[in-house]
Length: 196
Image (tube, rainbow, N blue to C red):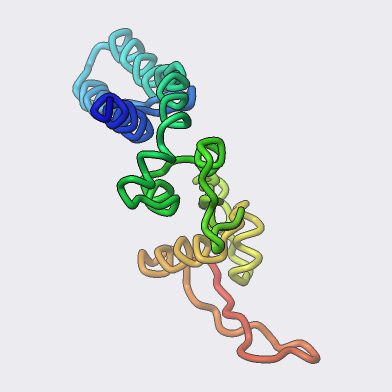
């Protein structure tokens, strides 16, 4: 019986990492690279059109159905608590293995005191339009990092700074000095940038 329980727990933990558990799209970057090479080499216009269409389709990705691991989750919920107590395994250990907190609670575990909703949140990446970034970097009139981020649709200041620093390094943007201080402003004045 113990081997069956361990097998079930092991299968559930593997299912958390093996495949995407959510439905979505997978993009094959290698296939896109091959298609790009074929497009460059192709001399026939109609064949090139077909390759461009194939590349566009590949960029959209292939639909992946959500994997159903509910049966494995049921086994985990029924047996994880007893097995963990017998083997000195804590809820924190399961959290480190990416077991969702909701599943641990269903299994009868108490979450660690320092575990809160904020620790469960993961950073979400938002896509940044390269066209917006390029347009914002080409403004000749001096602008601040904050103004650039707003124009480019970038919410993270560090991301905006990375784009600007790279543009300065590449010689596309120059540092135009410091912004004038306003009444009551504390600290250093913001840097001004402008397109070259």
